[in-house]
Length: 491
Image 1 (spheres, rainbow, N blue to C red):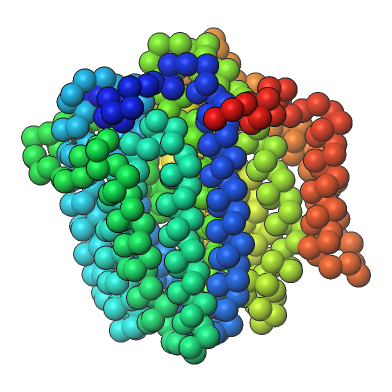
Image 2 (image 1 turned 90 degrees about the horizontal axis):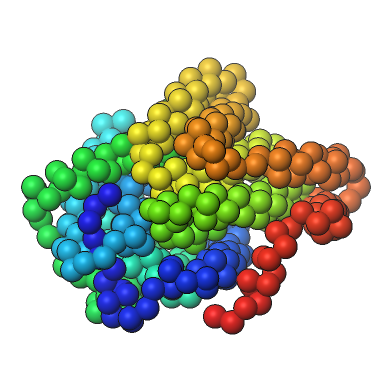
């Protein structure tokens, strides 16, 4: 690992990661981030409903395509630097950390600029409409600003200061939602919705700079020699991050190229829902990454305990989310996109299967990262990416949006299984039990069957399915025994 210090600890004079409070703090942080996410998602549902109704099937497909292209290229050059920064700030000590953070900020800025140029060039060369090229250019600028803000926020995450992190995320979402609502009420077209990305990025960038200006350096450093050392350490994980970005976004890009606008619109409606939900595993597990990193540096028993606990909790929570969306898919699509997108409900249900795998995968990948197994992570992500591309090309022309969704689900589930095998070997003899995953899925299947019941609103059935699952989990005593105690403990 890189030799870094902890600039936040030098300011506050504490090291919560070295105390027994780390676990409860991470648990509360995870709940806090999920709560903020849920509030933002609820607001996003309102804005998405207005956006899809205002733009219609054709332009809403274009909107999702433009934002996905930028996210795709941004992910390709992300280099995993945020996760690496959190890991290093969680285990390091010494004044060199400030220099390392400046190098990471500078490298992230340059890579993001390269990604922006590549996204614009791809959109132009691929023959997309002029409005999409302009929209991608604007969204690319917003992506650069947001990446800098996220890099600065690593100092907050490393010290488990999730209140501020959650507040910043929620602030960005509130501004985006307010903008979409205003534009929809004004009857705006496609381009103004895309232009909204820039002020949304700025409104999170400024307060982040104010919060961390005394804890971590804001100004980038452009030192090619240091960057080469950084990249040698992070390159495998960077490539894995790029493959992960390609994995989920590639189906939408391929759909826009090999299928028609209607099927792309259906896929885009489901994608709009599922891409928001796919952020959940990272939010939850990201709260535990500092603990994983510190434990991996010298206490494998603690690492095994922490990973097992997060696997158990995340599997239950992930099943609740997937079960609710799967059973209520028809009403979710109707609320988010409108009745003309009704065929997207089946697409969303297929996407849900992959989402369940992602909750497990996130824990396993972060555990491997904490162990310094970046090369293993790279190999893990490349296989499912190839599977996804091949299956999308094979299935999308004949089966449209459902075929593309099937490709993403199979790829994600394959990644979860492979990651479990690799982590098992890396942790030996400190093995992670996978029984909680199997039993949770088995319990969810009969609850999911409520989706077949007719004559009852899907959202009502979704609430019933989730209630039955939660009641069964509680009755069987599957919830980690000390979780509620940690959540109730003082901050």
